[in-house]
Length: 214
View 1 (cartoon, rainbow, N blue to C red):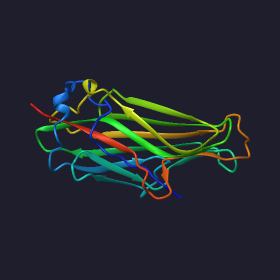
View 2 (cartoon, one colour; view 1 turned 45 degrees about the vertical axis):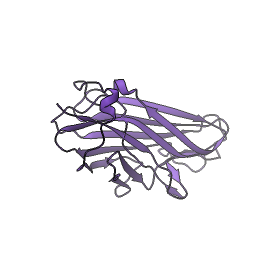
View 3 (cartoon, rainbow, N blue to C red; view 1 turned 90 degrees about the vertical axis):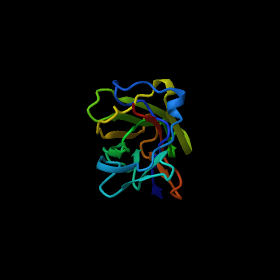
């Protein structure tokens, strides 16, 4: 089974700078500029060992995709004491042409979970710009019995979007976390949650909101 995650960009979870002006409906419609590039500065975490995460920008510059090849938390059965929590911290350098800035307004997370009666699982994501004290953290919970695909969406109202300050180089950080909790379930049985797909098609999508700088 191939564990996976993916990320895109065209809306934005307000995670960024407090000094930036809020978005309007008009600025939200600004198309992505040509020349946007994204590179991974660092990847750290038990859910994304070295060589298991890759980033690509969509042709329309409205999304970027982060693919993980091994990201799953589990509890019960033969699980070890550290298997119940997995995380991945991505430090991304988003290079935007002069005259534009961006925010992250929505993220669609998908995966698969198999939870025994009495077990539960948590997916959590935090977003922030380097050097900014503000962090946006959103979590979602699943309860057993459960054996199916899952999807969660983090959204932020357009009027509340916060953009990276124009003219400043600040890396964008995404910290995701998966937890599997056995709770009152049979300890001999394994429960797990994964950003996962048997065919590699399940993705986590982060959407960009673009704004022209003054």
